Figure: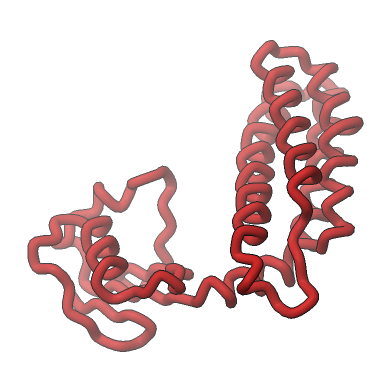
Length: 191
């Protein structure tokens, strides 16, 4: 197996039995605390886990080439901040589209869409909160959303999730329109 880290060939632990252990070995021995894995390319194809720890299921015998590309936490934060306004717009549109689908009676499809939407929103909130914890890496004059705005989004997502859990589709549509949309919109000011 050929392993490249940012274009340079590196050696990895020969005891690695699957893709996950190879990646962990690279992270432990070759990356600094300020590095973040940006992309993984396996056998010249972009690799993304369909589920957590899926790389455990890929034996090293099936990996001929592995390329790991990293960026610094500072670069990651800058990319996040550069794109956050667009993400907020997409999330607002998603909330309204899912709500409209629920109100039109397409409950099964919109419920699945909501679950995906919920995961994306929670990941976005977590990333925004993490950005704030790296304030020393923020570009001059930049800041992420304040903690209260992030908590408001999280509370509205919890309320909507509760409505979905109880199959209260009207309440879920209301939560998307009246709680989630404004809470997400309030993040625009921070980006």
